[in-house]
Length: 130
Image (cartoon, rainbow, N blue to C red; front, side):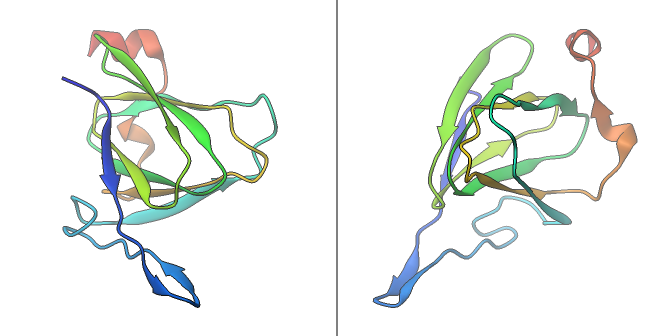
């Protein structure tokens, strides 16, 4: 079974441009309690390197591209996020790494819970023991 669950967000729009709507329990499979975005990541820098005990997320590259690596301790998969109409569902207890950011990358993340440092697992060896 693949760790990669991509979500297609149908664009709405007309000759003036496009719009993508992200809604709890519609296009996003959980209540959205927190939204943040990552931008300005310098070339060669990778991010993530953690898992969450309970938090679920959907990540969308609204501009530019980056490569997401997901790992459940038994399998490791990679996918490019390079479209504002494609998101990736990241379940709880999945290690995530983000690599190869383009200069213009803006990665939007929708989270099922508010920020809670106690929910993070930041050490890969500790993650494997869970």
